[in-house]
Picture 1 (tube, one colour):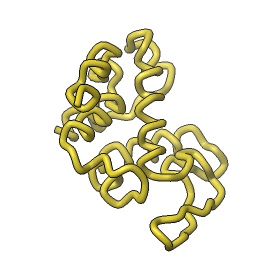
Picture 2: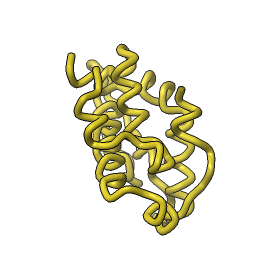
Picture 3: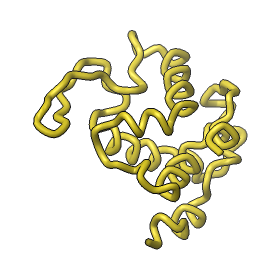
Picture 4: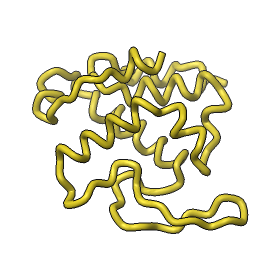
Length: 132
């Protein structure tokens, strides 16, 4: 379930580094790239950008954007998005990942907030979504 994988605790980058596997940041980064493809806009972009959904353009900022590039605010934004990941992906104009339970499960596993709960490279590569 989303709430079990994504957790609610706030961690600093140093704390995450101390409690992670060597590949944890790489898997999270891959999940972030995939989320960016779902959303259709750079995740950390603080300026408005134009996104086209069908024939309707609209302007948005990145999901993880924070004024002043404040690290605590960015972490807070990331946590908010991850706690509502299913709804975020459903509303996004990009890749329709939410149409398969396996796709959402893989994204949630790669973006698990606690690095010890995050999918390993082997788990990601052998995930049913990538095998289908």
